[in-house]
Length: 250
Ligand code: PEP
Picture 1: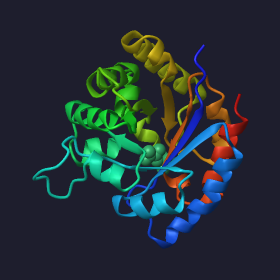
Picture 2: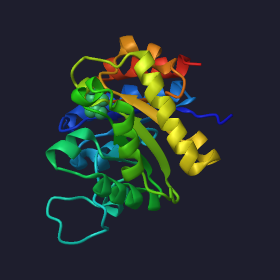
Picture 3: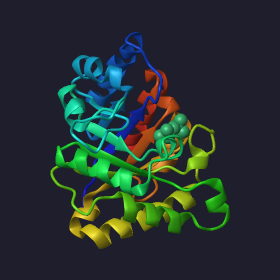
């Protein structure tokens, strides 16, 4: 059976400042203590380079990337730019970008392919809305997102899937362990059918109101290989216990 190291990634969204980078110091210390856990932080683009310089033991990343390497795309940041700034991770297809920037599965797949081709750990986010879950469509919706958003070739980077039910993001509502188990099993089956043994080794994160007090329960669910954490990644006081919960998970 594939051994998958736990992975905890913080998504700072449009939060943070140079002063807030002091939070990285205790996070890096916790990551060093929890040597079986990989830890990353994705701050706003402007903080990627100083974050990477300050905390070389954390994997710093971008919350998005453009599919092209350069060109007339005002306001966008490419994968080579992220890499030059020290990024090791790219998040693609976050539901906030799918909604706010109208990103389609095709857009996400192109971004993910660019990031994977450059050797980044590439997180492809998927997740259903509350209405889709209520209509019993959650697994079908997520499976269709995977089919459309995950590139066929993973290239040199590492593909990671983050299951983030939209209704759980920033709301304090968390999917039940049974719902998470059902979805992660379906995601694993999809990855296995497309990528064979490689799909068995791909990490699947849960995201949506992960906090210190629910992390252990979530990490005990089979095929939950870690978490993508929004609000609780902004301070070390909240984020470090999540790293520690991952280290204690069997
Ligand atoms: C996220 O935005 O990826 C997320 C999971 O946010 P939160 O942890 O705040 O729900």
